[in-house]
Length: 273
Image (cartoon, rainbow, N blue to C red; front, top):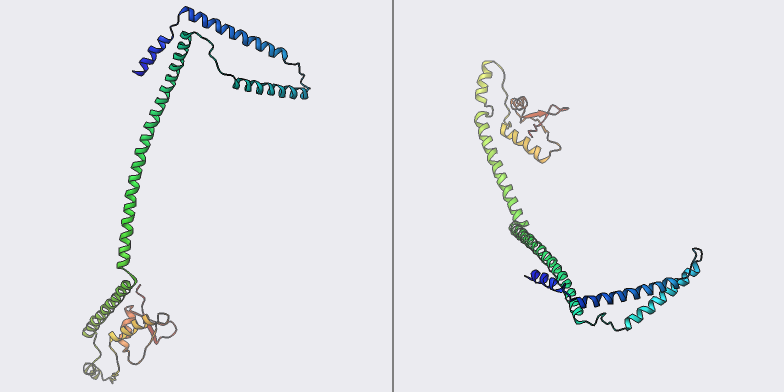
């Protein structure tokens, strides 16, 4: 609607009477003639300067600058006046200027609307980004709070108590395993008995001597394991009269124990890991 009104005003502004048009043309011709006269006077006043006369050129430039400055001050002190006194011409010129101003304002409005739409899209994107960052911040805060609660729950004292409880549990489990191993070895690998062995040796007419200080196979294994755990740098155990030779031979044959490379009277538990 506004653009239609502007076009109608432009068509109306383009219509001038013949008298007003002729008066405006006459005034323009007079102004052009005056400008031409002044330009000719300026050309005639300019001196002929050779290319080598740099000093004269500088003097002329300074004089022109002073003249231009004086003319500027003169124009600033003068009150502007309209070129034509005809009301119809002034009305036409005013309408023309108003129409140009309206056209420029339309362009400004169009640019502002485009910029507003662009800013609106940017605002929506920034709001979406802000919401995502808020969600990330909430998740991070929840994670931090959960870690803090876990830290309070598993403090150093609690960790120490749990470690002690695990150690006690492992010790109890070890004792249980050792008891089970002892029961199995006592049942299937008992200590040598004097009666049965004596009866066998008596049939073969071989004298029998069994030491009363012999230890069981479970005791030998326990000694070997304690030696490995207590002194891992020196895991060897010296074989004495309490170690029944068949037990030692069985441990060596089945890879449970190994002899010392330099001393055959020392054995250690085989490394199983």
